[in-house]
Amino acid sequence: MTTTHHEIAIEKFGAAHTLSFRDRAATAPGPGEVAVDVKYSGVNFADVQMRLGFYPDAPKKPFVPGYEISGVVAEVGAGVTAVKPGDAVVAGTYFGGYASRVTVPATQVFPLPRNATLETGAALPVNYFTAQLALHDMARVRAGDKVLIECATGGVGVLATQMARHAGCEVVGLTTSPHKKPFIEALGAIAYTRDELYADESVRGFDLIINSSGGVHINRQRARLGLTGRMVCLGMSSGVKDGRRNFARIAIAALRTPRISVLKLFDANTGIYALNALHVLRDPVWVERMTRSLVAVDELDLRPHVGKVFDAREAGAAHAFLETKQATGKVLLAW
Image (tube, rainbow, N blue to C red):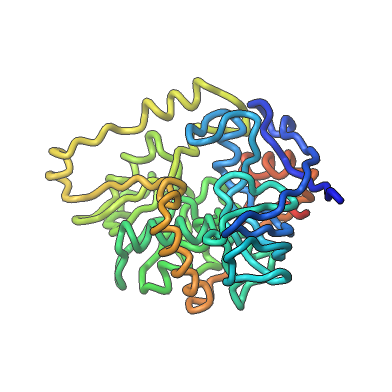
């Protein structure tokens, strides 16, 4: 008997309402694969960018977006021993996560951490891997470092703040929305709006800045680095506003992104990194390394913040909620 499942596809580029909810038949897992009945799918800003047609790594249309899910193992393919049917798991999907059943290689599936629920578990893969790569694999933060996290109220920022504080860092968190400052302060960080930071020249000497807006904000924040400070750039959210497909805005953001000279860096004694976590996690060695590092979720008692959960049929509303900056923490789809 063929079982029908559901998925959310990008069939054409455009506003949030263009997302397509459709049926699909289930497929049995092949050797080394795991089929998961999905409970929650994570929604990321990258999904918004690919829906707008501004994400160069996205597959050709039509395709199913989504990088992370949580759920229960339905079936396993030959050779899979790490998980079994009935296990609660979290998985990285690297496209295809907006679906009620997902089949992925077993190397991308790991047991639900002890301190997580299926809801908070779906908020882990992208956020944790990105924060881990930025803080520890690239910037190599140390106790006593002064860290500025621009995306402090987002899913990555929430975990990055917790991880940096656990490492003994002083953390300053940024937001563009003044009413979100108490949320940052509740995480144990000092809160500023971005405008407040730019107006206060005394706030500088950062050992690490995690930048997510790109464009003109890279140089404005880079000027606040101390000697031997590092900046890790995660994206270009300044190129998107209110979920509109605006080529002029993305072009302006790209043009305002600085072309940084190595010779100039000699004068500043600072470093610049750019992180595309998807590219890193295409490497099987890094997938295994990042998966092993997930033990830190329990060891550090990391607590993802789920800001809002939408029914999967309301994926368009979930995108609109995220792209209009209403969200704090993670936005999820429930199946």
